[in-house]
Image (cartoon, rainbow, N blue to C red):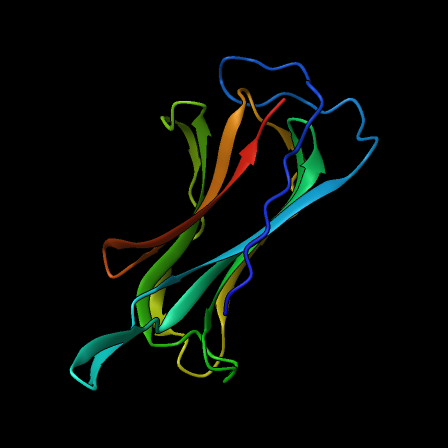
Length: 159
């Protein structure tokens, strides 16, 4: 069973149209953590189709109000093997910032990894940059591999 917990980041901060402003201070740190299963395989058991996810995208956000002080995301297997649940080629993890209507207004693209990785260890991204989001809505970790979007995990940022 996967545990997904999201806590709202509250307390208004100033913003600019381009998405981010300098953070004057962070008073009370809050955080959000959650995982999203994807991929996998299906088998038939007693005449019924049963599917198992092959991997999980987990995303952590720390901050206060509209200020984000830390994010990380990783792709892990679902069986405790310490791998990414597969061999992913040409992969990256982006941070997508969405308004309250779900429209993406800014994407911070992660570095592209131009090789196949993950069969021997988890893969991921860590970002310790402090930033202030321009709008309430959500922040998402989006996993891309082999030219396609594989999974996304989002957390709300609300007043």
